Image (cartoon, rainbow, N blue to C red; front, side, top):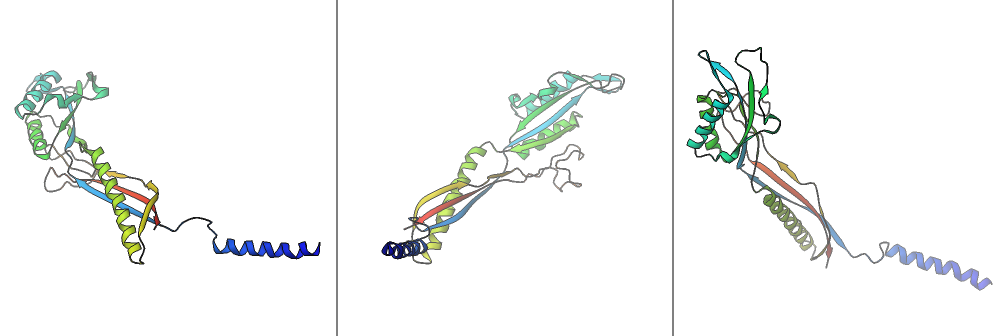
Amino acid sequence: MKMKIILLPAVLLFAAAISAQNPAGDEKPYIEVNGSGELEVIPDEIFVSITIRERSANKKTISVEEQEQNLKNALKNLKVDLKNLSVSGANSDFVRVDWRKKGVITQKQYSLKLGNATILGQVFAELDKLEITDAFVSHVQHSKIDSLRKLVKIMAIKAAKNKADYLLAAIGEKTGKALIVRENDAAYYPQPMWANVRGTDKLDGNSEPPADPIDFKKIKVESSIYVKFGIQ
């Protein structure tokens, strides 16, 4: 009975010593890194919001239909595909604004998709000639944004691998297999952009437009990837 009492503490002490030397059990050495990727691209899809209102000029009423046809003719002359001109959702029908207010009886809102700043400037010039002053760039995007997002993710994970390689090489070690891969929050930043008609309409709420009335800023696409690599 005394022998059992003496040996039991010794066994427990030996087991505790092993656990202290290897607290993580069988876990292999590893390195944790974050890699990032970033691209900036010029938007190639520019959406213009255009509102046409019935108005009076020289005692003559110019209907929405007439102005719409004039707009379509102008776009045809600029080689703009009319498929890119659509009536905006809630404004698909004529809207009565105020029958008592002379010159503003009905209105219709459109969305026009364009491809670059050059054609945008030409369209604004035509709108000015047609005296359609309620027009502005509602938003911009890139036609291949999904592919760009994939590309920056690949850039980010490659950057993580490269970081692990040079950090471990500094201490004479090599990067092993990836144990955990986790995407951090990806980011997509369409930058503010200016566009004006007659120098009056502008975007993003800033007080003053830039010197050039049409100035596009690049869209920034970013990604960050966390990777846990084993160490060979």
